[in-house]
Image (tube, rainbow, N blue to C red; front, top):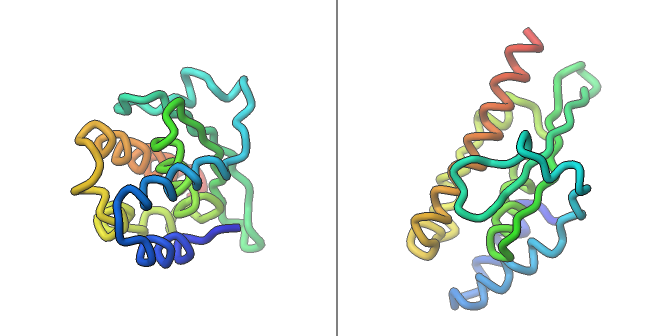
Length: 143
């Protein structure tokens, strides 16, 4: 399983943005297929120009804390890769860990701010905000 540190290391090895785009697309191909029933209005992320779906499952860790697990998909290859990076960063973590993670700083470190269209950048922020809202709700429900 690829970690966010693996992705960071691979990005550092790739100097050209064409190579980075190909890598992001390749990451999208590693996503498990999202079942057709999860391509629903409820799972659709608002604010993305491309169609993006995130399905969520919550279970508990050994301490009884909620863990948020995600699966995702998009109809655009590059966005599917961005979904894969986002899920690598957040899926399988507690709400507190999710809320403490500065995804936008990581995406800036990767250079997405300069190399993604404004629409894709907005969609990336919408995915992050959706997951952070889920984390807030799970945290409130656990209290």
